[in-house]
Image 1 (tube, helix red, strand yellow):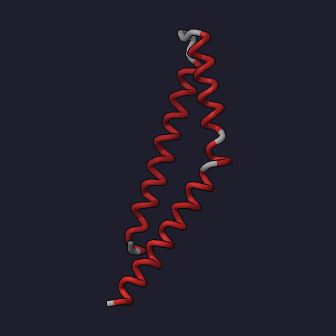
Image 2 (image 1 turned 180 degrees about the vertical axis):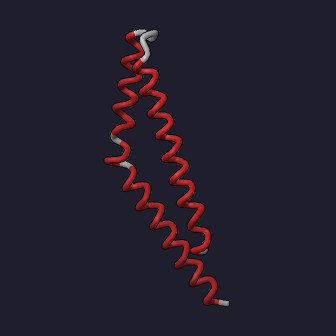
Length: 84
């Protein structure tokens, strides 16, 4: 792993964020339509409530694990190159 490959990790994070954002917007639009049943509206509201917790609890953990993986990869690569 090289620092030059860091943009791929950042790109993946941005793409996942964009896809999640589009999904939440779609859920919001479906929840505001009048042609859905009460069961569907309850499911949509439950999904929105579950997704709303991701930025508060999971996003910092995902980013921290990603950064730690990059650091470990750089350290291991540095030691492998030093042996040669």
